[in-house]
Length: 176
Image 1 (cartoon, one colour):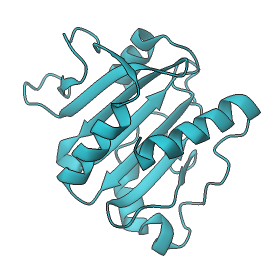
Image 2: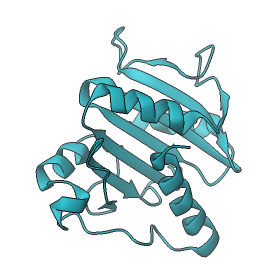
Image 3: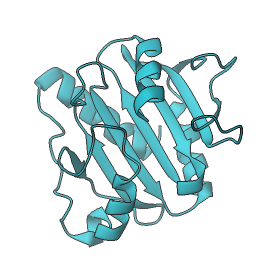
């Protein structure tokens, strides 16, 4: 399992079982040697789903050999939204693709929306061009949507507190 999966799933279990929201996080203005530069954190923050921002997401330590910034977020301000989210800005497309494959490896995958398989390409708004890959499924009794935004080298992850993949997928399509 990837470092991305391990860290987020550990934080998810902490959040869901202990009621602690993302214990161990560091503020976005923390030491850039471990959490990434403020420029990279701000670049990544521009990719967050609706309702998330630097006011309710926390910069995390990065693997500087592959990542530029990592933000983790707790429950969406929208009560129908995810219980947890994570966003990662990678140094290049190769690291993004490797992490995506590793992250979805242990999920029980199901097709996203009207896609016929998971993972599959996803399209932003009405564009016919692929924006990246998306996978839907469950892991340890939680629905998950994991997607790449290839043009930005970002991997994003939403997790629900229940197994309703269809509802989480619809929230993602409406809120990014």
